[in-house]
Length: 216
Image 1 (cartoon, rainbow, N blue to C red):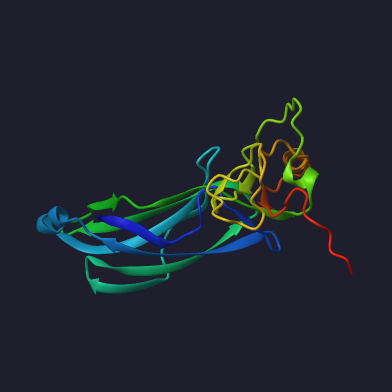
Image 2: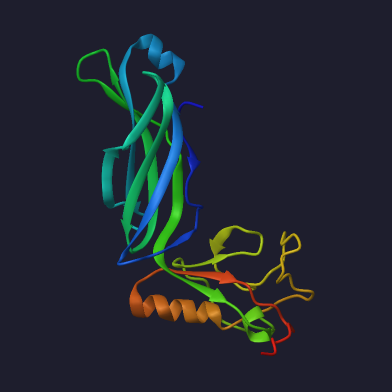
């Protein structure tokens, strides 16, 4: 693959816990100029990165070169960079490989991996029994919201929707439900919290229906 391939990155739909109104993200990756371009003539190649708001494509962090590059050659290598992203979102992280031709005043941006639907806000742990697990099975008009996300039991970040304690691909997780979970109050809470604070919300579900309470 030519261009930029990320080897360490946040997950799509991930919520990063803000501290003092921002979150730090580390990216690592590798880069390579396509062979055909080298044959035409490439003078230099530099990995670049930016952060944009997904709702309007506004550049929160403009294109800039990454801080650390280890080169195998002028056209191939690895890199590492750190981003300080302000609270809010949803964001998209874009990467690209900027090349300058041996011809005067000619540059080209090659493809790069992206991170999608990233939020910087607050993360909540959902612990408890039936209500937290989502044992309500009544009619529930509780639509998802783009800024309320869930770390599902399949170990992937996703848009938060009911059932939030679904056990698909849970692979023996400690809070894997025996029954079919339904709705819980937490999606509604997440939407209200976002409305009040403007911070995206991430939930991590660890509750289990019928679990015993510890005796102290």
